[in-house]
Image (tube, rainbow, N blue to C red):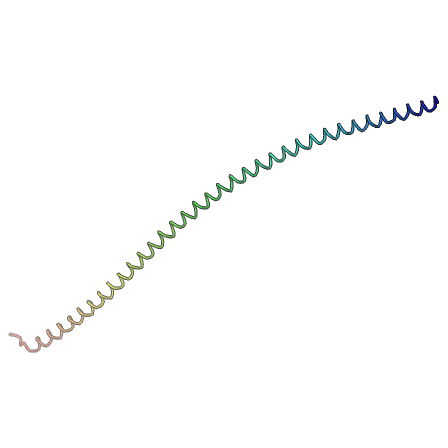
Length: 129
């Protein structure tokens, strides 16, 4: 009976030892889990901060792109207006050139006619000498 009592106490001691060991493992695992939660929360905060910074940067870049696009659109519109204005001025100048060429041709014709009349008149008149 003493042997049974000894074996029983040994088993109880062994079970208490295993329970204590398991409890220590549980505390260590719980501590590791808490540390992992803290690390993951810190990492999540870091990621959120980076996303916020990226969003701000993206917003800033989109605003800059819109400003440049607006500036280019205005420049294009202004250039197009100037080009159309230059075309109209060119057409007007071409018309004026044609008109002046016709006037020059007419004046040359009148000059030639006047020269011929002067030659004819010179032949008809006699010198007074």
